[in-house]
Image (tube, rainbow, N blue to C red; front, top):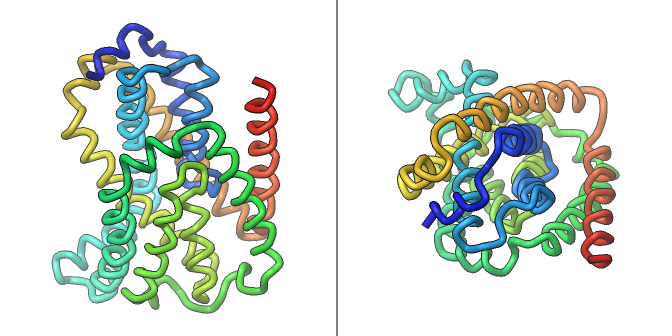
Length: 281
């Protein structure tokens, strides 16, 4: 029961911090799941099955703030997808097909292996290893010509290529890997422009987060409100929205003139720090 977490509670300050962490890291190639897990440990939250379940539900629900940020910043593309769904935009319909093909692999594998992955890998150690591994992959990738982007625009994305990007997204079930990282690199390797790779990663993240948040709201929404009330989740959601909007705008501007290398070095630094702290404790 989520109400078991009421023993610890969630202060407004903790709600703001978790919302900030979620918003800043959700769409950057650094893993929001890993950052939230470590942030919860640093705040002394969780530690029991009930409190961990409550925090997991809270973390998924404040993703609605990140969802809202993408909906606002990419409203014209979302409107195109809506027209495609209604049969009024061939381009929107093709992109919807590619998104559906990309969403399917992680949805299927996640449904089958999600509980096992959570039991085995949701810890600081596995997250730190994934941070370091992802940092090394980024630093390797930026030395390859394809990492600067190819010539294929987002409008050229096919369902087959969408499925390949979606297959890469399965790797992000390991916390700390980063969904954004693997999907951006996969799209770049397929010859898409950097702008197309980043935008498709954001749109695929929107679909993935919508599904996860909707499922969690239906499954645990009532218990979540009973545990934390409405004010605390809404506060975290609002902070996540502002932080995600800022992070998305910053990342798009950054990558116009710079590579992904900075994210690789960041992942190596934070992963090494986490391993050192883990070893010392």
